[in-house]
Image 1 (cartoon, rainbow, N blue to C red):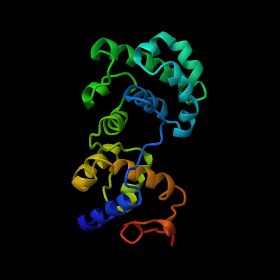
Image 2 (image 1 turned 45 degrees about the vertical axis):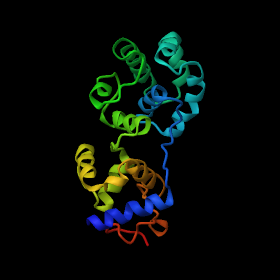
Image 3 (image 1 turned 90 degrees about the horizontal axis):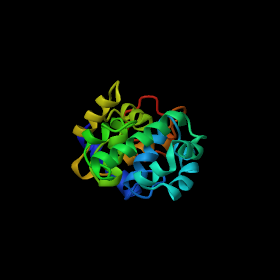
Image 4 (image 1 turned 180 degrees about the vertical axis):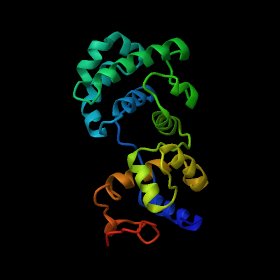
Length: 210
């Protein structure tokens, strides 16, 4: 995909949705971190169904430890892999208190050292909570980047590195949100809605449904 086409794509995204937002419910950097950990291999909708009640009683690492693993699991048992996620959230809460004075760190290395936190989770937190221009590659973004030809790759890391080179400077703050939302609601996996796509004329997808 040519540089001029990529610039035009993000110009249209920005005109259509100037301030894109992630769809997970959270109230502070800590609750965002917990929500993103819970969302792994689960839908944002399923996570949002349970977290308001959880965060009402545990919106800090200290309160989460007071709630305890059993209490936490009672709040998240409808979310996939809740046993493992519950253990990880308790562990990361302990680590935040011991190593970071209860605050969520603002760099990838320290975030990835926390239980249950991988590169994608770290990127979401860095971007959404702290405004860093990171690219969190989920299944939607991965699909869009490969279909459009903007940043093709066989692994999320290859796509992420491609995005870092391809995305214009002014678009980097919101790029991953625009692309995720586009993949979730327009460039869908089974049947992309090409007719209503605002970038259909510059997209490199050869099997466009028009």
